[in-house]
Length: 458
Image 1 (cartoon, rainbow, N blue to C red):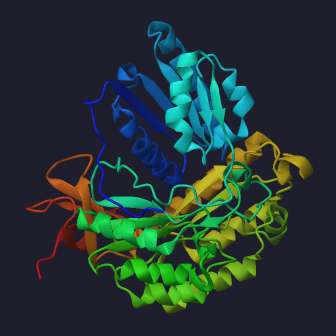
Image 2 (cartoon, rainbow, N blue to C red; image 1 turned 120 degrees about the vertical axis):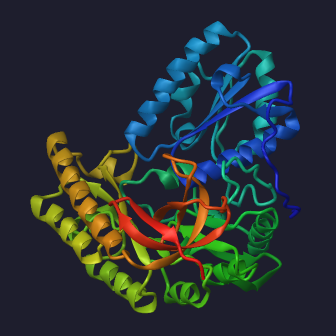
């Protein structure tokens, strides 16, 4: 395996063949799209900004919720019309939806090729084979880390923050979740390749990396040449943090049953490991957690939160919440609201339950909560989280934070926006600063989503 990581920026408009990539879903998909571009640039493709300019359109898809898949079907209908206008245009579907719905996608008139999450190395050959007139498919899941030796082409706009995939797949088998079926089992990547990728990013001006996995806390690498040599997630965090104190380190996503004290103590030990944990709860009800196969109870979840607060009092916690899972009673729903109040999340991703075909929940549990009740419960959750977010931000009024500037604010180029270590968005006067600068900001006002402040000169 080669570990020659280098900073690669997208080649735009220089190749004979133009590529447009559209990405849906999680941060892992964003990083996967960067891997795809890294594979296709040597094959003569350059990135373009509009599907109307493209010779090849690739949609990197998400299957977590039905509405994400419906959006992608709508895009395919649009691209079918575009193909009528331009006969040479090719369209491919990548990612989780490609793995889950391969046959259905392949018969769509817009689709020429289908490639699952572990099949991207074969894309140049699949695309070349399209010239023979037949559609192409490769959706074989791997038992090993698939792209450890590939340096992703960084498609981010700011050049400040970037993602690094440290593992693939998931073994948790939550009853509602399709991820293990479309991304396979867990495979952890050689830590030295991760550290080298992060080091090169820092050398090329990046100030922050986010280590990605479906469940980063279960990262565990064993040296195939020496089985006694292993690396845990806590050890990996330390290795990346030691690259340079000026490199911020984040990670996502954690699983409450796997987050060890070792990870928390490592976070507390290094100032450049950001004090923010995304800790999905999904429900505050033990009955729902059991049916979801989350493998922890409400009490165990709250014990993890208490430990986080004990070791890192300034650590922020965000979460995921599902409203209206199978059999959810009003009391179950109230339990979710109460755990939200008890933890005091600074933000949350909140969704109605969306039954995914062939999951354990779809096979065993009826999707029996009426849509209007799901919607009402979700609205209650969103309303409460708005109050919690505002309270969390108000608690920061008058405090000073080191903010990593990421770019101009949406409203004005006289203002910069960035994030604190706690992952809170801050807007402040730009002055002489630019993206990539660390700025000490005193918080003067806030909304539920944003902290607003001014620079403190020390």
